[in-house]
Image: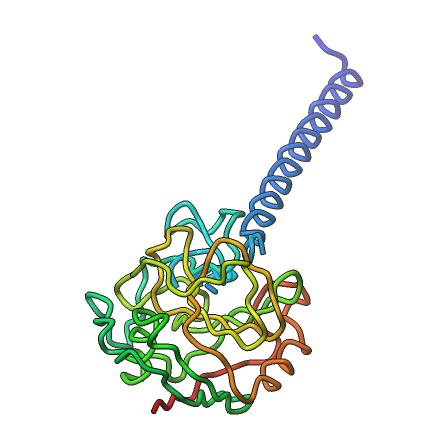
Length: 273
């Protein structure tokens, strides 16, 4: 029979071993979560949005998870936000908000009327005036015009700000997390800058990794940004960009380079001519 002293030693040894094993398991779990988080951030959605936003900017997270989204920038499929190749991703295209109309298909490109549109986006931080190019990007323009006319964007918040590598504010997610779309996705890409440079004031569609995963999420660049992967440019800010620059200067809510803006940006309405 084991002496009491030896029994105590054995119990202490087993207890220490169990504690060590738990520490190893927890360390592995933390490491795995860090890797997953790192890949997800890399993947913006722009959405939908660095190598998410380039790597959902445009992560439509609108679509999907990842991106300019992405989230501006985006993923192997519209529901995977962990692809580090997406910058502006639309993130998750499977969800749709219940308090807004949803659609079965994207509008006819003919709605863009092959012309330039002008408009103003009434934001809680100030008005932003813009033009839309219905000639070079008829499908994306028709899409934005239809959703804006229907009030789809009204009362929604711009959910993503990136401040390093690419410089975008991403909007159009009614759930506020980039995991929704208007009930459809569309493609192909239109009016993509050949050099990948999106000058300050550019308005472009966020998407997931697939080129036909555009939905409702879009992004606005507040500084010149080089974003690889291809995004449909359909408009340009003509006045009021300083309002978005002020939002960018305030940074993100968590202090990171890719996340929810510290300053709440609400779309109160969009007027078009």
